[in-house]
Length: 571
Image (cartoon, rainbow, N blue to C red; front, side, top):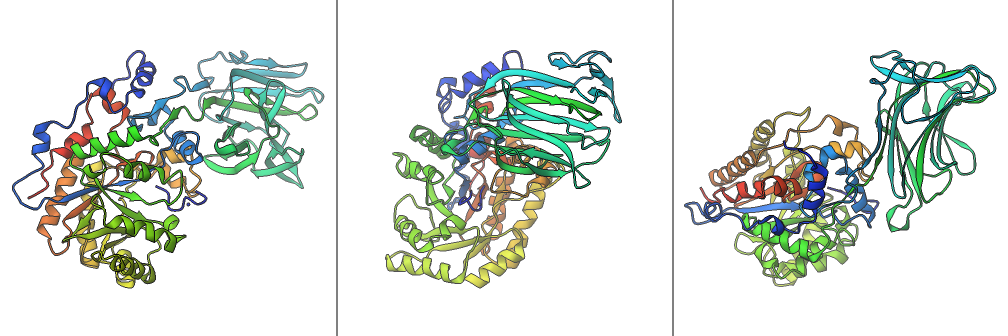
């Protein structure tokens, strides 16, 4: 999810990629023989009571395809093969073989030239595989004692006209000796990274188009550094081509201009300097297509199918993170234009994007309150969530606008990350209830542990804030955004360790059942008789119930939705 989009705020058998590519072309699973949720599962929702709990799910509609900046960004998070199991059913594999180069040197003979590389080793230089140094395994040493020539190694790959990700590890025995890592279009350097000494400080630096050097960071002798650069030759929306540079996982350069604008890149190189002696070591070199999938939900047919999936699973309403403008408004607009929109109701979650032009956006939202597909609770009160920036004046304006339109008083729910902060905001702004967007955990704990923690939060929020809409988190794992950081979350380093093991469909169903049971046992705290699932489609954050391509390929069923469909809505 984005909090401010203004800037933006096991099978694996033979032919696996081919199967994925074919399956990705399926729309709504029809070609896989999929039908609706089984009748026995749907009938299980009825339970024995007379007032079924309303089950909602959060929607974050950034999956708008590669031609939009935000769509391209989230595509990249799911492009590594280890994350592709999260891809929504409507995704396509645009590059089945995204890995162009992937080479460590442990299996190569010590003393030999690195296989697959064109090596340059004039007199008093050498390029060869060596043990270590300073760690287990092998690397390539570029030894240069000539004082007049340079050692080099070049690797050519299939020419690419869009973004590529290049990774490597390297060190110099004595650093600052103008060793270089370059990305080329033939003989033309597109990106040039070097070590140097400036005013007595040893640095890693990036060469700018005017030939000057900008500091990436300081570096030390005889120290391995893990490097990554993402180079986008043709960014969406006509943006200027750029390079990002990461050192040990930390983004040090963000969208710097390329040294030379080029239509392709096809070679990665490492070199020493002609006039300086050095031992440069290089290991674990890879080049990958940065964006190898396209998750494009911004089509009416996709939205219509999503509604059918949600309806058949007993999802009563979607809580749209409300963006007023394209492209993030497109999901909501497609929903509102769907012939099936009355099958699943909706409500809004307000964030900074909505609130930035609050008065202008409010009239459009309030006009929707009276429509038959807007979710209401407690005898007709329009349901509305505030995720951020709620204040008393805004809440009062919402209520006044509804009254002026002849509508019941909205049921306003404020979201916050702790029970007490939610209660404080509720009291300060005059809201009706509290909730939270999602619940996370760290260090890869089992999902069952997250569920236990979140179950306790329902009572904590009730004790602090009174009325509650319980959140049912289906997962938390933002590691895709560690590998490919998104522009609206600059503090992404913790994502590497803050994650939860994947839930089974049965575990998600059990957690939803627990929330419904909790609500029935606490009617004064949950008078709206509603719960909220995180999430329908937060794929790269780890929370989703929308069918995935892998589910449909492997099981021929939307397994998470099947399990949710079988949960009784009454106790």
